[in-house]
Length: 401
Image 1 (cartoon, rainbow, N blue to C red):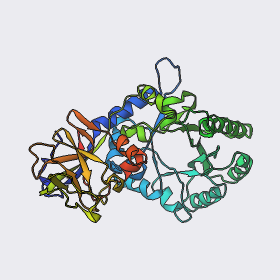
Image 2 (image 1 turned 30 degrees about the vertical axis):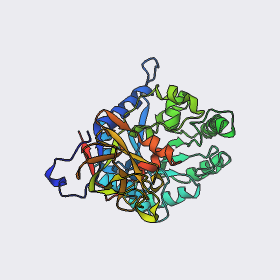
Image 3 (image 1 turned 90 degrees about the vertical axis):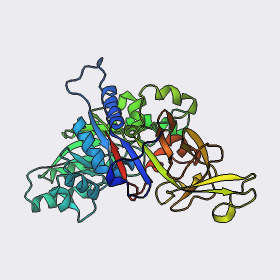
């Protein structure tokens, strides 16, 4: 059965919470680290692991998750922006933190004050960072360079490598610490544009690296493998890998779909977070009576309807209205009616003994039962990361050891 909080500090909280299993998190991290450092491979130094903890660690809680991973031996952490990086520093995180979408003008001072590493994706950012380093009297500031190998989002074009080299030569306080790119379709293996894209990106990226070396620039740490590439494309592992969704227990949606099960066996994962809410109301609804906004659900027989203390304001996707389900007392109960901001209704007619105060699992594990988030996400046409990140800040995270 789902865990009910016993800590006295949690008994008076609103009855919705997320259990975050730190043992599952560490299991996934250690499995990834071992997977990309096979014993059969002879390397002078093991590949490093940069754990992606942006977006509040995919909804799991940025500082607590990062501190647990740091203790477990993670080498780097990746966040979206300076603010996320500062939050980690203020929580006591000391390992390198990479700011994946770089900085905006005016943030340079805070970036350097908190020893955060910027990703440069436009040549003109070098002069901005150099000026900040000069003002603060920094001797050498390390940064990473992002190369756009074909995603057409962020990063300098391969044709701009020479421009980058010239600008770097004018920046005595800066040092290139790493070079990276990001794959657009590393989970796709079908004979489509997406299926061929990763190989093309690899070729462009490594050609750009070779040009950097020809210009006499040491690229430092080379990293390009995201979650799907970690599992399926060992040729992309380079010096460091960047696990995101797989760190939290979920594989990407590999294509073609019939290969998913086989691929997922290569790296078994454990879901880290379970979203739960308690029943706060029970009522018997007669046949033909509408339930919730717009009477979108009308039972065809007398039904027992329970109300959960969580809605889309907490992270329950509104697209699950009249199509989702929850785990309660080891059984599935369908979501009925339109999901509200603060509450969700479920039909517990077929679940014996349900009482006010019972715990429902929206997704995650409930004892020996499981309701995986990736299946919930797929049912509403989104990705698992979207579902996990949607868990709002008003939902307490309970960290289980």
